[in-house]
Length: 143
Image (tube, rainbow, N blue to C red; front, side, top):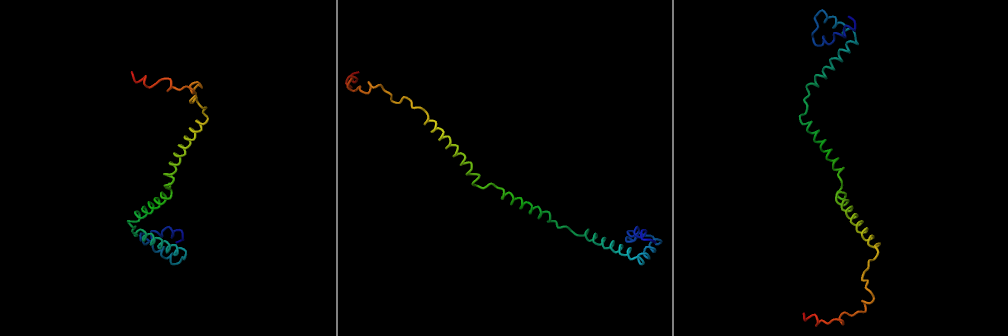
């Protein structure tokens, strides 16, 4: 038996599915060929590891712990990205105050530039007139 035929039959040999007419030549070849024997030993080792992996039970709380860690990381990121209180409160307050101050300054500046209206412009003759001397209070009391 050559190495190619032996390699093809190794799986069936390991599982014990070979008929005796093929099983005996495979065993003799494995005893005489070091390369095929090593290949067979590696196959047995790989199957042993895979069988053990199949029997390992997963931790039922693993997914819960992972999700809790993810939520904690997201919460930390949210806390890091939160806007500080001074930006939430002071920024709108300062904007409102600055707008009110700008309006007040605008009104003041507009009134300063406004030309003076005729405030107390009386004719000169009226300033020298004495109304109390012209009419007496007694005249109005008779009515």
